Image 1 (cartoon, rainbow over the protein chains, first blue to last red):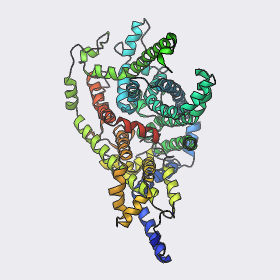
Image 2: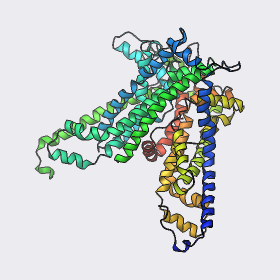
Image 3: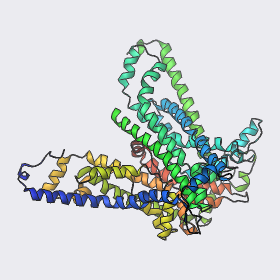
Image 4: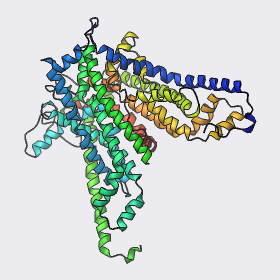
Length: 313
Length: 286
């Protein structure tokens, strides 16, 4: 691209002028990059490094920080009182992430349903997408009311109609997490459906036609054409879902505040509590570093598959 | 191929299948819509109808004044103003920084271009959750807590936005730039007067993303604002919960409707661009 389209009259430009021009272009380019770069340095790179440093200090907010090496990490992993809560939130994070494959399955099924040319299909697509653009805080408020532990909550009134005992839902240590998972699936489905539909529509129809001529049924069409060609999309949706799941915060804060009995405290929420309720910045930063390692691995995997997705299209 | 030549049975079967499809999809869609329907229904109920058993699907006496009451409750108007100011400022600021950086990456050759690109790419690996504590500490040392800067400035750059806009800049033929240059058009003028108008769709969808993400953001405003006058709508919603258990659910739901409506309205206005960019941008978070 570099040497293309150069007008003939320009070929005789002296060497030193060419260099000066090149220098000018570099300078302006960096001026163009400057606003973004400043923000990234101050609010992304510096905090990332700072996070690691703070994690090596004991820093209980009104007091001055004191260097303690890896004590925060050791404390999280082994302390008799703290470690059980830490490991509980660690496990809860993965428990919560069960929603991701459930979401994936449900959205794929609905995407397959919506992937046809029938009247009104656009309306249905919009409907399924609606939760994804609504604010999580507002939606959580609604779910809080749906799951109200009294007979006035909609779900409990349904249970009564069915002759079943009412439940405490989000206030029940056993049920709280499954409720959150269900809400997460409901919320995240719309986005995944859109991605899956895009993936499904990028599969050339000729493949299906050819296979049909060879006498393939619906099931084997799915198994041998749709599934393998949808592979990269699937993996992409899976890792984006995992990352978002690891970062979930709003729904937990609005609906359960990590309770009851830490049943819904995930690592992200645990980090928030330590930093902004107990003001233990060092400990919170140690959690952040651990979370970073997990997120980094997931993002790295995701980028590998974005590459594959682009390549394959 | 000719319809009349086909036997009746497959056609009937097709009709039945389509009918079944509509039934299944309608039921699923209804299930997804239940929370929204219930939100609207409850938002029109008075306190005594909210706590009536069995619950009613159609409000007996629709309390439209709930929607007026919301604005009288506390500084809800102020929250709305704050959210609007912050979301608009972030949208314009972010778009500007993205356009500039995208132009450099798409249209200029400079030393260290690949390295810079890598720098930008790597920011997407560092998620906001991880930098939460240090960024808060920075805000404190800047004395930005409870100021608009704290809600706006950290979001004025977005690597995903840069990549998306760069992509569409690259699609514009280079000959256009050569021609403009021959006519004495400078680099910056070319960007503003020629390139930007040609890339309106991507700019519109990036603007929408920035607006939506910021309007809906919760964690960050929660941390960097303490005073009531600086809270945003998403945080303001908490105001309607009473710890004593006397939560006014009718008002609460009306408030939730008000909070979610702006983005939903925008979505319906520009649905097509919105969905397309959703697909191409991939993950999105603030």
